[in-house]
Image (cartoon, rainbow, N blue to C red):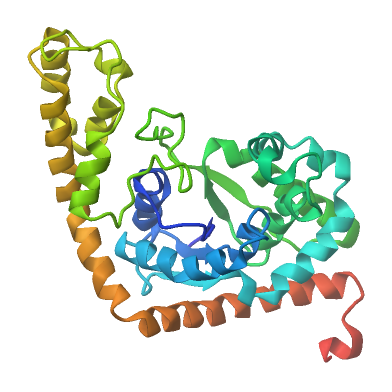
Length: 335
């Protein structure tokens, strides 16, 4: 039997090229080798969007369009909505007894994210945000996942899941599967403004669904070498955001682009124009597939509902095992 792999993505905005190269492309490539579950994590999205739930709701279908258009095949992967699996919430409650507050506060990923969201939380971080790694442990174990594809920054979350599994199995007997992380091999893609991260809400992203004119406009405003002030000045491609994007969309021409830039032959305007052409050629099939899906929202919703039914059947079995170990299986499990 194939090993089971679980991926989660928060519906907080349409997907951008950072998502594609950092996650989506690799998830699509794994579908033939693994039993693939892809979760739209709307409950987790509420941990820092609790004040605008309508945004999260609206983005569920938007993310589904991008996932399917980007290569996640509903015939080979199970796409489902987190909030429609109540077993996850119940497992989260039980796992909360196995994790201390100090352990959550020491999580380096959570600490970094709290610092980033200081404007939202101030000095009063919510229980839901501090404890979302416990919910992630429930996400993973609810489906008996063997592998979880993550970036290196998410490894502390997987380690906490493994700690919870080991502690539960030690206390109550072998029950839960201990997952392994599968590190996605990709570098973080900078934003168009040169920022260290491309973000949905940072105004520096190229979205997979951007129209050609929008791509042209965004790339025209992208940061280049700040020391190259005139057309024929020698450039420094290693510090240029546009050059970094050529490495994603125009790898075969990268050597000549770098040489022309350093010699002063290549101007920034022409370099950006060539990049925009490459990006639009790359995105056009995605835009076309996405438009077809947008024209049939009820069919995409049914894909999510069918995937949710399949995923919930797995979660029910896991929760039944857990409740039996906790002596909560009253009346033989009949409510």
